[in-house]
Image 1 (tube, rainbow, N blue to C red):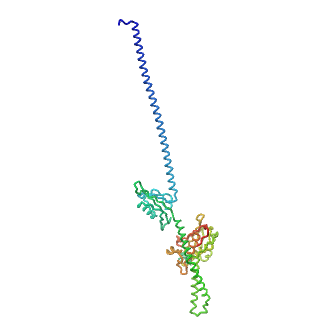
Image 2 (image 1 turned 30 degrees about the horizontal axis):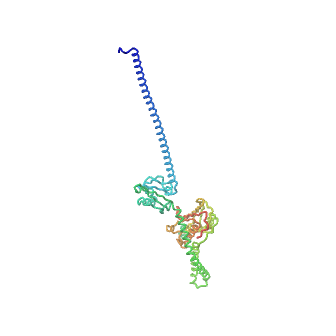
Length: 421
Ligand SMILES: Nc1ncnc2c1ncn2[C@@H]1O[C@H](COP(=O)(O)OP(=O)(O)OP(=O)(O)O)[C@@H](O)[C@H]1O
Ligand SMILES: [Mg+2]
């Protein structure tokens, strides 16, 4: 140690101080860098988190928008299907395999006159129309579709005919899950068809028999004419009654043939604007001394044959007078008119007579059906022909009061060219 000079000692001391300073400096730099690195790392982490949150937010917003759009689409499609089901003019019933009515649309309620309740088995709900329930049952049982079947609903109020289509609904496994039943009220179509058939039948009968009746009438007129020429007083006493009978019989047969010709002969309508009120008044005037007639309601103008329409009302009133006379009473008749929309008039003729017998109700309009000793049974056949040739309808029933009731419907306009029967 004695070799080291004081200057050397100072040098050594300084060197030691410098080394220490450098060490402190290096340590500080290392700490600083570590700290800096730490800070940098935290910033990046924070930036990542913010980015991630924004991305998740965006995805959530997109999903929400998508959910809203899907819900809106579902709402719109449900609204549309509800509207379609409600707006259908056909009746719609959806019946599950177990028999519950899943859907009953307003048209089905209207056509079948169902109440608002649709709880319960379809057979109970369709108790008033078992024919319809049977078609649904058939489709559920067989799994086969039923296409456009016409069913008749006999003997009750409401539609007389329904056109029915039933389609079974199958599950993924192929079993029948439900049945969709669509139906329409065919009453008007069937009535038109019946009307057409009646017109055709009347035309056929007319063609066939008019010629024959015409020949009869000519022959009868000749016999009647000669019978009138025979002077009973010029004959021996015992032959005189024969002439009277001959005259009476030929006269009455002549009336039958004349009436039959009126019914059977194809007669063109002579159509003009006709006031139904005036036609009715004129017919009523003919029976002023034999009946008490009350006229009620409205009567408008139609395109029609005044002479034929007058003869139709004349026949109806005559029948009421005769029916009352059979019971020894004076006839009391009510004629009630009303418009049924702008295109049709309804006239109901009701009397207070004995009413129509059950047999009569089903045969009333048939030619030659009569319950009267002197009747030809052609009066109502002629009435029906007149109304049908005007494209109208006539039906008969007994009124609540017991008398006969004839319900006539006549259209305001006639199609061109004029109908011939
Ligand atoms: N207002 C009525 N009340 C009761 N029965 C009626 C009435 N109108 C018709 N009938 C029944 O219908 C039958 C047929 O009537 P329709 O007018 O066709 O023939 P008719 O009156 O017997 O004979 P015709 O009219 O040819 O003289 C009548 O015989 C009668 O039995
Ligand atoms: Mg008559």
